[in-house]
Length: 286
Image 1 (cartoon, helix red, strand yellow):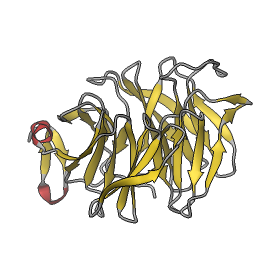
Image 2: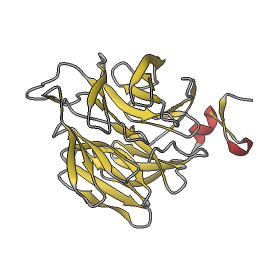
Image 3: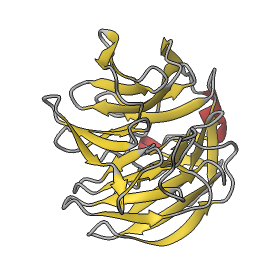
């Protein structure tokens, strides 16, 4: 058998199969396309940080404006109550939006100092929040002298999990929520952390030494395979083995599993929104 991902019903996707997958263009005209997340209500949300908007894509109706003046919304995710969590790099904060539309600031400081520019975020099933805080645009005044990976507890406590030399970017959880993955853009690698029941991280290790391009966003499927955005979508096993690449018409910034069966990978490119159908559904924590 060739190296690949063995799926249900004895179907096996190989590295060659990934490169042969058909990527469909959904919409274009979003120069800051980022942060896609699928709602169980049947639509996709994604950011356009250049225009400071959040858009809504309904497969039956197309793209519409979800929120304007989003404070540079970048990464987005949802929790089990359907609340939207957003990293706002211009306002340098993380917000949570209720289903009724009320926006609250979840956190905007660490030890009294403002964040650099929160970038990507994930919420575990039990409400523990993890996000990255790199810096890709210059600030007039920078309060923190490090890049951070953070953990916010349901009780409102904030802790720094890591302070890497390079900039942490994409972040994701294993299907069981026991492992946290963080992609580092500068180091071009991926670190993994074990998570306990209280959400605390330990056993930091480098899972992937060198990705084929500088990583941005990432997602994990139900089998534990990791999908990284960059020049293409690079796919790796939970053990860090390269499985193949999904080629795109333009570079990719982020991705998210969606549709009712979570078997469609939605991808935000440099200016467009794409999608591709996969055999294995995504790992969803909401």
